Length: 102
Ligand SMILES: [Mg+2]
Figure 1 (cartoon, protein in one colour):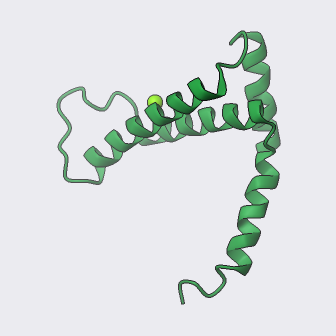
Figure 2 (tube, protein in one colour):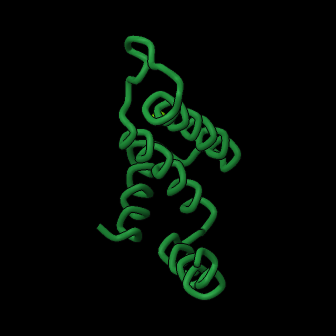
């Protein structure tokens, strides 16, 4: 699946089933929430924190997907083409950061 298709799929869902986008600021808060949930899984899976019974209701993959979903929502409602944005970021890494880690 291409990133463009992901953006279209998200938009279709939001406009039909979701009944519209939350405001960008609300989605920013939701992104922060999702990053926190991802951090909880990371801390208890790879960090020093120990999970209580039933603590990890969702997997790392699910939490990463949640972060991605809200990121796509924010991109869609603010007119960001994530394919172009990602390609621009990769170009910066290929040029500016070419020797950065050598
Ligand atoms: Mg989540």
